[in-house]
Length: 402
Image (cartoon, rainbow, N blue to C red; front, top):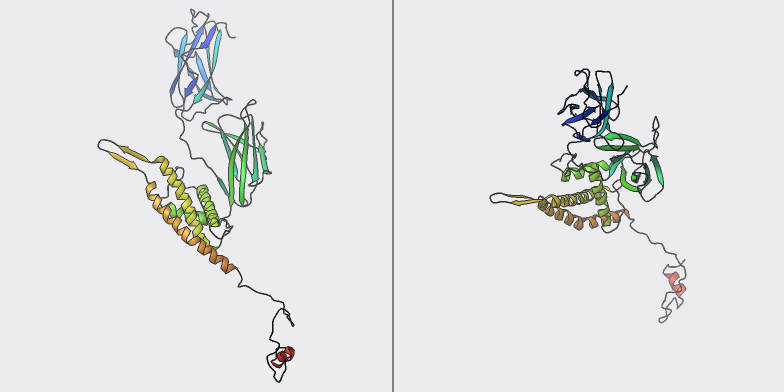
């Protein structure tokens, strides 16, 4: 039986703890609200004992508290593991402490607290386009700090707003999940939601997430671009990578080229080639062999232009009394861009015109024969001869008429 009295957590205890640090809890056990009659445990080796429970209810720490700075105040220390589960608005940690006095009366206190990381994780490069191969599903992700009140996904073909695949977040989650189920998983400082789409054909798709954070929040949207390619297109991507990424920058760095970046470069490169005279409709999946080098070069020009903008945003110029530091690799890219563009301007149109002529026929003409043409003028008579002046007889004489 719990005895009446004052049982509380001291104000010295923080309500937000940090992973990887030594944190302290202070308990108050008194018989009176004025805190003049402290509770003495019946066995100081066993009481007050405490338990720390994770948001899922599992036991993460337990032990016996030690005497605090004054009678009736008890203290415990806990080194928070670096991999301890983080909290959010829907789940928190709980600490429970119990003591028993000489008369067998039990005193309890509990306390909820939050757990955060000791540092903000470094920002990861955002995936601006999602790439997959033909006849394969793609897993779409959405990240959020808390569980939204409403979350749905609609996938449609570019140029059409009619969904070909949709999914919704609902609880309890279907077991086993269906194709229209959005799955929730924890990931470091937040929650990650994902859904596997149906197998997709070659083309460009739009994935639209619809989010409502709470019942009273406005509806928000997040758009993701999905492009499905064939294996042949990967040869274009590899050619562009071999041209502009000889350093083979490590993936994950903002300076690196991932496959989605290279796909965007060759897509815009093919559009650039199409814009040269005469207009054409080449794609990354269909183009003549003689045009491939131009698409690769145009894709490299597009990619290096993006890299040049990156260097413009990250250049560094420092001058001190004895040290001067200048970092601006973008200046060297300017000459490369000019050379690529000059080559494209000088040769793309000529090659496309030659291909168009080669694909066209040599030409043909069709006429309707006439035996007696009335719109021609003939000399009817010039002096007299053995044949006379009859034009028809003259033509018969020379074998022009049967």
